[in-house]
Image (cartoon, rainbow, N blue to C red; front, side, top):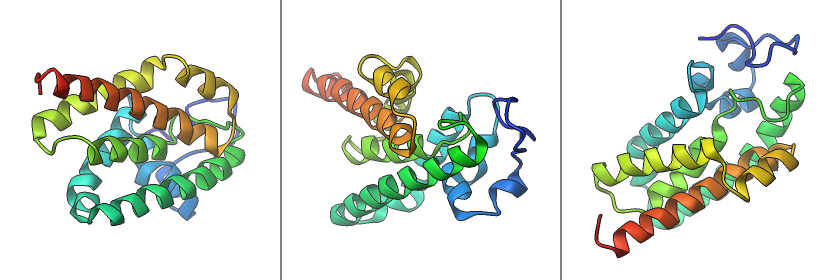
Length: 171
């Protein structure tokens, strides 16, 4: 785990202990998964998948919708607050955005393990590459909503690709 923030310009040290001193940090850093290196977004997405299987997927659809909406809203607030604490509005170690966005993808795709694994790869691709308008929002919205929103757009791209694969009977 990294003892310092991903951008060394900040004087604020980031450690697991620092993360677990505040509920907003615990959420923003994905229970500490955002401190794992390399590729904290991938680790956060993997945690999201694990939480989906263990908890979220067991809820009825109305419950999942409520969890998604509440997690998105709280994530906007938590990521904004933690970004201000760090002096970086969208620190790469904040991974709650990947978690919530991947839950959306998992909710709307077939439940087979192979489809979920493909969805993981496709989601990570769009989250990393940031095709338009994902990159536009990633660069322009510098607050909690901006942190969360670009990943929802990456999820939308992922869902579109997966829907096409289902329609073409590839999945």
